[in-house]
Picture (cartoon, helix red, strand yellow):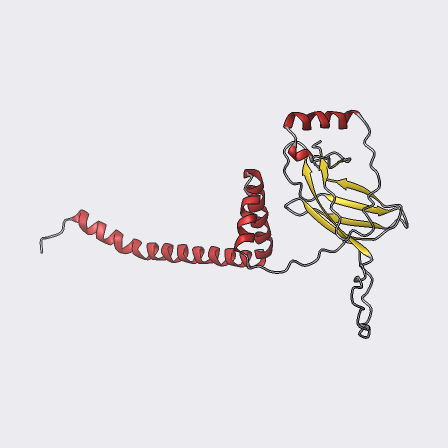
Length: 236
């Protein structure tokens, strides 16, 4: 070995003195990192439900902003296994089901089955100008016979459905509410507004804003079981 000069000896002594300090710094850094990871894990565990809802809301908003919501919905429906759709029900509470009745006598040949005492009303709510479906619109059907109010919300495809008591007269007063649209609405035209040109739809919208639109109570044929009612909204 070659002889060491004074400078090298001093550097060696300093390295020996600073080695414990470097080890302590490394240990403290590791402990701090582990603590941060533990705290982050605990926060994620306690807030997992809120984080999941925020992620789903952000994803839905991004799809709607990019105009891809219908595309992804149609793909998910195509990939989902076929199943029998459940019959939608009104937001109004239904009376409790009665106890099962005894089996009825055999129906005579040629006799028609008894009709239900309600209509299954279905329809589409869409934008007059863009023709896009309006999701989250609240529909109100108020019976002129007894004042009962039935409520329904449109889904992300703009469709709604509800069960309404079958009436022989009077009908239902219909109203639609949505924060981004006019409080009033247009009854579907014949031919439908969505088959008209944009210029004719703008003309219909200008007439809508210049006049008071009155609606005839909704009263489908009594013997029709599943009536359809489309409504058209105008942006504010």
